[in-house]
Amino acid sequence: MNFSSKLLENAVAEFAKLPGVGQKTALRLVLHLLNQDKQEVERFSTTISKLRNEIQFCAVCHNISDSSKCEICTSHKRDHSLICVVEDTRDVMAIENTNQYNGVYHVLGGLISPMDGVGPSDLQVDTLVERLKLNETKEIIFALSATMEGDTTLFYLHKRVKNFNIPVSTIARGIAFGGELEYVDEITLGRSIATRVPYENSLSK
Image (cartoon, rainbow, N blue to C red):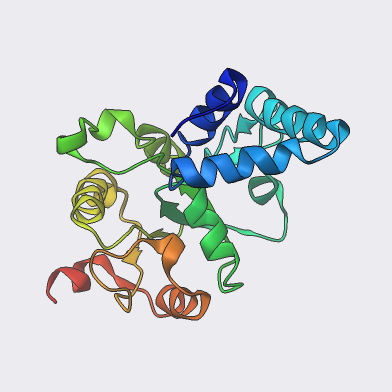
């Protein structure tokens, strides 16, 4: 792709680094910004910069937050005895959109994937164990993607938490193997949480 401006070329190159954005889409986005008022573009730039510099991760569940503890963890309306373990913030958002869950979360920050060099120590597993030591948890729900990495992570987590004698369940597999939670429709995801099954039962199927 030939550019008439180095500034334009550099901007397109930066946008093209975003997931799912090719050069043509990046060019379209950059040209759109050029057609906006300078104030609009500055507001856009400031918002992204502020997001990167000021965003925090909840000290309890590791979800993205505006403060040291997220709104879910500080809410008195949530059932803090029920912890739903998920891969990342996108899964929290997907589950929240179902309006079928009223507990709290624990965000792992990824899944175990030896091929990608991601091991248990790279995830927020130890902090989950520390939360369980407080003896406030009555059930753990594993809501991980139905992929090989998800199942590997699930197996490892179960070994880490089974000595606490806390009921452990996993979302019902109405979700196809290989499916990721963020792409599952709200009704299916909501039902899979509502009809969750004990983890041991899921191993026999």
